[in-house]
Image 1 (cartoon, rainbow, N blue to C red):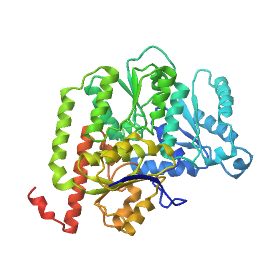
Image 2: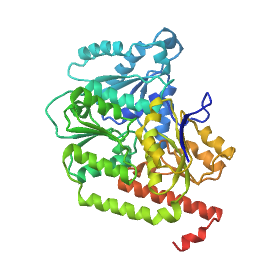
Image 3: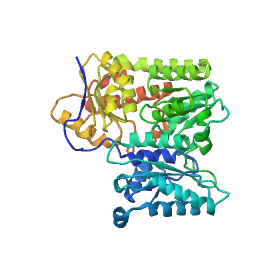
Image 4: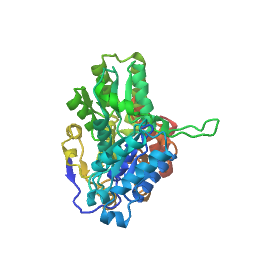
Length: 461
């Protein structure tokens, strides 16, 4: 039995798992209050990303574009930044922060974003002496990395440009990574139960926005400029995702001596235990009995399903690295076998992730971890009958592989647009572990009934 970690052998990508770096930076930007990201590139770099967000959350988000065309691509597009900021500041009096997000075209032509910001700041100071607008450079060339590294770069850019040491706040910084509103609600629930005052970066709870009696809809992030400024004076930082926000926590540690703990992503029982213990370590607050009961309820629900339905089920998982690794650890907890993990960008550090080493030690079955992968890596193995699968876990872009090969699939990650309301349900924490277990079970139950494979068990278990 072996766990092999390797790179994809083919050149090129067929059916990509990930999106580009600017997409990740835009997601970080819309998680900030009074913020409109300005994407410095062609209009499509904004339009198609906004479409993905709208598909996933069923809501619209304000993202601006400098709309670089042929002339600007040849002669330089710095003037487009100046015009874009001017329009945003004039049209939106509430805007306080504008991240300027580069793309492949503007990185290739070498536009001096920092120089443009210096010039624009002088102009803003003269035109709006009583108004402070923060301009944040975010470099995300889309010919390298992915939305994972783009999100990470954006969060670090916000922190590194805004954080300032002041009086201790007593708060705990929590860097969520690319998680859903339901996960943010779960994080806040834990902080409240443990009587810990925390700041969530990025706070996307209100992406699940209500329609109010006056018929208004408010969809925006809740993380404020002051939150970034005060992050340097926090009691500590916890980053739930190593590759999405972890570098911001490390920056605060290195620059301002803010204690930080990176990971593990609290998916499953063991990882959630570690998350709560890390909160205790940084704040001194005990874990309350209410959360012990939540833990017990989750374990009880998982035990009801594990041995009879989950044991030895073979699973393929694809998506963001922290999510995939966390889901693989969850699978091992419930006796499923994650035989194939697909990580979809060119980050060479994935293979040295200590969590993969831990999984490798525990795996008593043949397992592959493919780096820089695409969905063809999954489809080819199924086509050539190299693997047999009982379940696929990943976002909606892999749905046709599941349909074509008649394999049940649990939608998880970004984007999930072919099932309703998944962004409302947490996958982290004890409640997330219970939701995952029951969702996997119900997906397998439906498959058993459709295929008439031992469906009679459902009458007697």
